[in-house]
Length: 170
Image 1: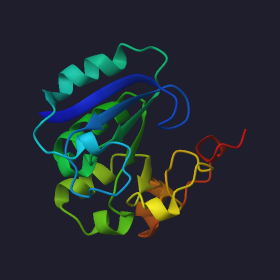
Image 2: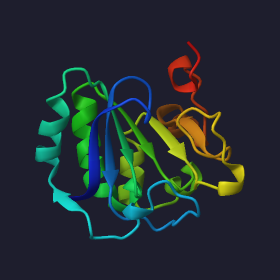
Image 3: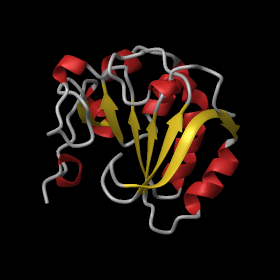
């Protein structure tokens, strides 16, 4: 079961195109200035199983991408990993926000590593209020990176995503 704070079926701010954004409940980071502090408390969200969430996602014929947000998706890595595998098998692009860095997740739990291995894009790093910028696409502060996860895993270190759709260059 996933513990969720909410679902946005037609998001255009959590990645390129029309996406489903899934906001998990629970976050260990508690970044000052966080835009979703109501998602910090663990266990206070709505429980939903992966099949029910899959039905919601696939009911939107315009959606081809899904973004995991928070809270902290990597705190529920096993269940988000199950969902990500199902999404990837069905041709969806899967992105995830995290307050962890790519390097921390590489050294993290087996479940965190498995979730990392199933996603396409990772927006990593904690939100840092002093580095906040409204000029960034899909990020809140300049320390956060948009990473190409398959390329990063191939070489064993963070590789920035360079596609125009993620960089906002059209």
